[in-house]
Length: 263
Image (cartoon, rainbow, N blue to C red; front, side, top):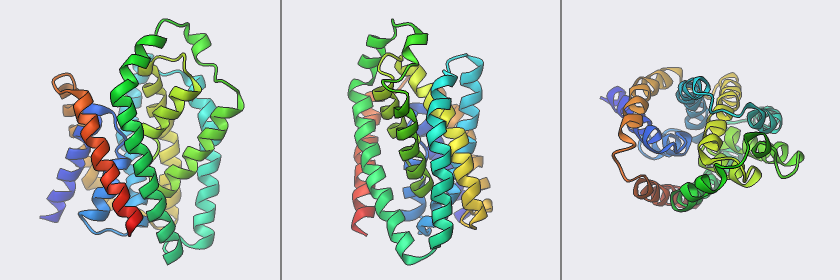
C-alpha cells in the first residue's frame, strides 16, 4: 500500500510541475518529511535525484525547441556546481546524519520554502507582464547579466541552498534570473532555469548518494509516478487558471516552510 502511495505522490508532484513549472523539490521534500515521516537528510538526498530525473526530460524538449540560452546556463553553473561540491564536502565533514546538521537542514529548508512561496506568488502576479515587456529586446543583449560576476555569485548561493535542502532550483532560480537578466523573456528564463537545474541537482544528488542519503528504491517509485504526471500536467496547463494554481501553491509552501522552521 505504501509503495502505491509513493508512486501516487510522484504522480501528484509531476502533475503540478507539468502544469505550473514549480520545482518538484519544493513539493516532494515536504511531502516525504510530513506525510511519510522520512528523515530530512534522506528526503533531501532522494529528492535531488528525483528532480534531476524529472527536469532532464524537460530540458531535452526545450533544447530541441531551441529555447535554452546556454550562456545563461553556463554563467550560473560556474557558481552553483562548485558551491554544491563545497557544501557536500562540509556535509561529509560534519556528518549528514548528525543532530546539528539535521536541524540546520530542517531550518534552512523551511526558509527556502518561504522564499519559494514568495517567488511563486511573484511569478503568479507579475511573471506574464515581465515576459511581455522584455520579449522585444535582442537575445544577444538579453543574455548579458547586469554584472559578469553576479550570475556566479547568485549561482553559488543557489548551489549551496539546493544541496542542503533540495529546494531553490525552481521558483527561486527563476526569480534570480529575472533580476540578473531583466531583458530576457520569461519563457527563456524558465528554460534556462530548468536546464541549469539538471547538472546542479545531478551533482548534488550523486554527492548525497556517496554520503548514503539516497533511497534508490523510493526514487524509482517516485519517478514511476512523476514521468507520466509531468506529461499529463503539460497537457492540462492550458485548461487551468495558472495564476490561481500558483497562488494556492504559494500558500501551501509558506505553510510547510513555517512548520519546518517551528520544528
